[in-house]
Length: 444
Image 1 (cartoon, rainbow, N blue to C red):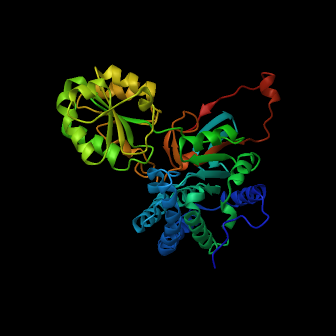
Image 2: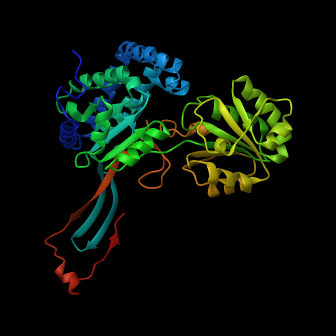
């Protein structure tokens, strides 16, 4: 029998959040081996439930096709919704990768001897309860569920209505698996159902410690505007590839193509190509022909269009430079030098991921140091900006901010720390009176 996904008839989000808080205290006490054993079992359960997951996803996709045809859902969002057998296998692989990671809890981050017999430690610990609000991508469920469990946190999820059947099935499979482990409370993973639930979740600042929105610019900023809870999210993924005058043009073509075409619907796909004017005449005809063959629409500045008079290229507007297309559209600009490329990226980019293609180490070093983004790459596709590809097992999300974390975030995004002070009857008064002095000696 399928396990419920947490909300029962007449339940409020507040009651779900409270049960998740209680569950989180139990999770925080679980041993590393116990957490890993559950994760390995969950990976197997996902694989065994492949047909259930794909059948549920087929129902979601059938409804979504109607929305796409009516213009109410974009083709990129539909692509993010689809789950295949290969995708299910990837879910299981990511869960096992998380199980193989080292324990994020109880790590000693610092130790200071304040005085004789008075020692202060800083150690990692779980956040507690994580709220995850996502659109379209049901693979978020096993990613975040595995990271939350590994880090000792309870999770409350709310997926988009377009992925409701798939999300319900994935959470049910996860909770069925938890039923085999009496020491793990089933309320460590929960699924909400309505839009009204989202607003109620965002008000649960006494029970929920962090909100992670995964989806469109509109979703992320809606959550940021309405949340009474800290939010970990990024606004947009306006990523750039800059082809320098010292670029290997073969590498440049491959990197540009992969960054745009390999999966255009995601936030780490390139939206703008910048080309140094010294190699533009040679490079642009080849790359534009290759991109157009893949169905990419090119929007170019005046210098780009001048160099490609026979091509039907739409003029790029000021709005294009600041747009995340999430589709087979690429803005192209010819720049005078590296300085102009860096200035353009820092002016129009979203501080996500930007790449330079060059064989000049000095140019690469300047680019890496001066571009203000969470990820800066030399001679590599922007599509590498991903927690799994970084070796994090899976990712909590990608943040372009500078507090708590930056870039693709794995387990470290779901832990905080506490200070543990061990004394032997010490009091503050002698230090205030000058009778004692602090040592403040760092301990390795």
